[in-house]
Length: 166
Ligand SMILES: Nc1ncnc2c1ncn2[C@@H]1O[C@H](COP(=O)(O)OP(=O)(O)O)[C@@H](O)[C@H]1O
Ligand SMILES: Cc1cn([C@H]2C[C@H](O)[C@@H](COP(=O)(O)OP(=O)(O)O)O2)c(=O)[nH]c1=O
Image (cartoon, rainbow, N blue to C red):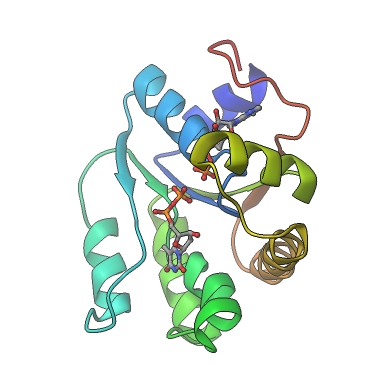
């Protein structure tokens, strides 16, 4: 698929989006087919110094895919924990490291009913459609801001097949 060939030309891909949008499926496929090292970034514990954590990840050698990154904090933080532990200023410093590493931010999205159905099928439970809508809107706002400072590609997987051919 052309879009995936384009993605493969970057040295760094930071893949972000709502749980269930299809990040890990795409990340695994790109890693397997194009030889990226895949790093999944799960929710980080409170004691972790977040900017140092992500800087260290980005200092790794070679081609890298981050399956989630510091942008999760901006969206999940305010909605689920009352605040983001990272400021926009800190986010933009980290984003500059991604860009300097020949990086692209990949925004994976889908319609909230699609995401909900996928989460139900994958996990047997899912947030409400309203909660998923809040998350997808949060990501849309975040990426609209980020796009003024760093390269962003949005992929809507609602109708996109997930097979090996992409
Ligand atoms: N492009 C796609 N089209 C249809 N289903 C998909 C697609 N990408 C992922 N899925 C399915 O949706 C579910 C969530 O995908 P996953 O990659 O785990 O999302 P995330 O990493 O964003 O939580 C999985 O069951 C996966 O098989
Ligand atoms: C990285 C991150 C994730 N999360 C949330 C997003 C997900 O709902 C949940 C689990 O994330 P994760 O383990 O990345 O799951 P998935 O690959 O299915 O998206 O934690 C945060 O609340 N804060 C964070 O900083």
